[in-house]
Image (cartoon, rainbow, N blue to C red; front, side, top):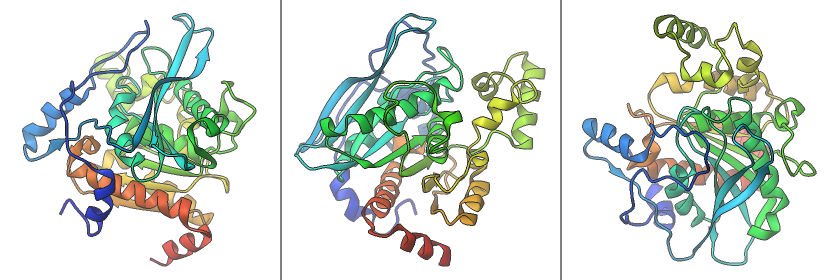
Length: 352
């Protein structure tokens, strides 16, 4: 079954009907190199060949949700392509209440995609009482690791600095991501307080710590024997780097510092944020998950796992899988942000 008991009750608040939109459309970009191979349109064509029953979830700004679009969260004075602004979109209930924030990081193999890929989920989750923030970050054609990580840390600081402008509770900020975005989101939250991972971006007078992570089918480590071997074999056979090696500046023996620094399993501390994993049934996208869970359990930190058991990686684009994804996301965030004593949540989870 794709739907679990109780999903319909929550989705009545966060899911609405579909409207037409230009599938695969991207946000306005600057004159930086772009890879456009990963789009909603191409993903829809590919997935529906095997699963004609699914339906793409499209953007829909419902009544009662306010949008702030193309907001600049940081300005980069010097890049190889000149001065550069990075942007977010912000969605929130159209009232004067203060809400937790969810910063949302798109996927695309650290190489492609844009923040519009997160817009359909962001618009709907906002209806459940959250300020949702799809974020632009630098990708491989523009800058390799750790630029993207530092961008996400910067947007957390921006959200906390500008909390009053958007009705955000600065003590309740979460980060989510899909695929490559999930790897980044997990790393951001696990490395709370780590100067090594912080970068030197704007808003350094406030913290980049987050209070919760949602990892949607993304890896928690690059440093596995299989991944290292696969990257070496890929280079040997094709003469150029696989995307993860390209992102990290080379294969493991050439860039081991980056491979280790970008692997969340290496950086668990008592300050690491609780994490919710939402996974497909494809094991390659679980790499490091179970190891990270074990490290969290040893420190009494909260985790939960939901596995949909399907053979589709970008399931978050499609009904009915995205419905379940949003249900688990909102239920988890409600648990973290609305339970008076999180230690009770941890104790209960360890008994299950």
